[in-house]
Length: 84
Image 1 (cartoon, rainbow, N blue to C red):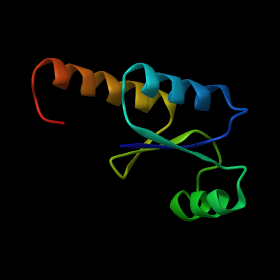
Image 2 (cartoon, rainbow, N blue to C red):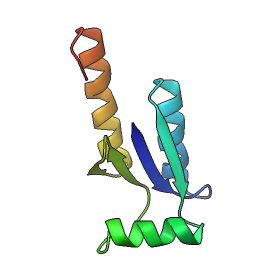
Image 3 (spheres, rainbow, N blue to C red):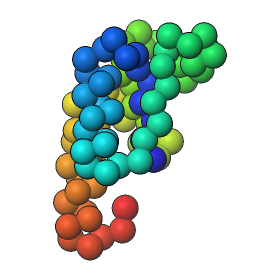
Image 4 (cartoon, rainbow, N blue to C red):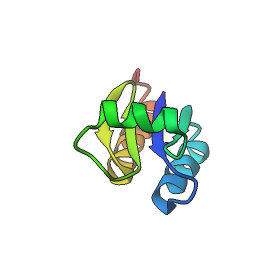
């Protein structure tokens, strides 16, 4: 499960959503414009001010570039018949 902290006005955030959908990766999108999500974002990432920020299976991996890398690994593992 991927959790994307982002905004619907952020290009890289939208690209993260599209990539998950295209690769059939389950994800949850949390819009930081919601005050409750903003509080959660600040608690999880106190020193980070940029979006998107991504959790992969609960672990913080970074932003768009890191998600791209993780999804590439995920697809390779699927094609090799390995467990995720």
